[in-house]
Image 1 (cartoon, rainbow, N blue to C red):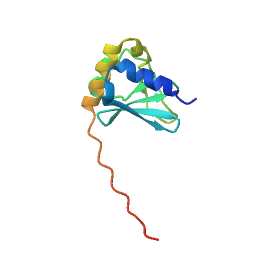
Image 2 (image 1 turned 90 degrees about the vertical axis):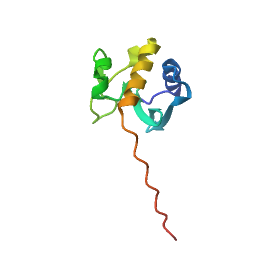
Image 3 (image 1 turned 180 degrees about the horizontal axis):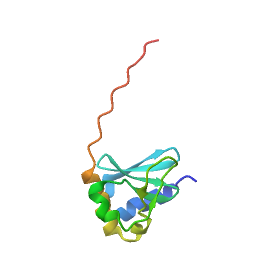
Image 4 (image 1 turned 30 degrees about the horizontal axis):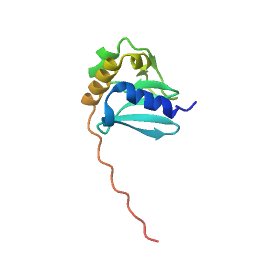
Length: 112
């Protein structure tokens, strides 16, 4: 089941992070970006927080789940949607501890 855009918009609204939190559609699901870093996945209308050791204390009470087949376990943050302050705290902490994404290489153009 693909994630509804209305769920994505709801998660963004509940996070109270404004324009800093963006999303991109990926294979019927969505990735959430904070300051250009992927911090969560929205799959099957559930919020999967990107796992990281520094934020383990903030996610230890959350259930774990697989966002897609073959993925590792992610903390499922659905219950935080009713607690915007805790949701925001976790999303900001996750972003803080993730590395800056590597710049994408420019594609080579082939001449015809």
